[in-house]
Length: 136
Image (cartoon, rainbow, N blue to C red):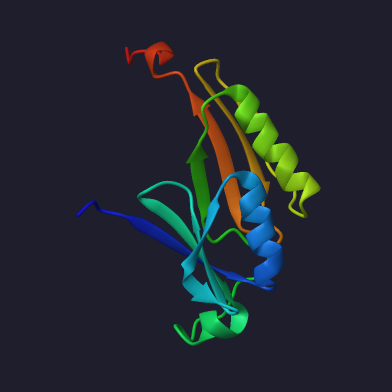
C-alpha cells in the first residue's frame, strides 16, 4: 500500500470550500464524506479533508484559529509558471485571497501564495529541477 497524506482543514461552509478546491483542480471523492465532511483529492497519495467547524470540534478540543492566522502553509506543485498564475487567479475569483505574500521568482523556482475562503495558506510552486544552482 502506498503511503498517503490527508490534510484535514476546518471550513465554515462545505459547499463553498468544495467548489473552491474543485476549481483549483482537486477532485471530490463522494465515497468519503457527508454534509459535514468532504474529501478532495489532489493526487493518488495527497488529499484534503474539509470538515465543518462542528465536525472539526468533534476531533479536537483545540480552538480553530482565526482566518488571519498562519498555522501552516501548504505548498502544491504545478507543471508550469502559467499553472501557478492560473491557480492564484482562480483562488481570487472563487473567494480566496490572491498573493498574500510577495511573488517568489528565482528563475528555477516560481511561486505564488494564496489563501482559501477560510484563510488556509497555499503556495502554488513550479520548479525546474535541472536549473537549480549547485551549492558552492
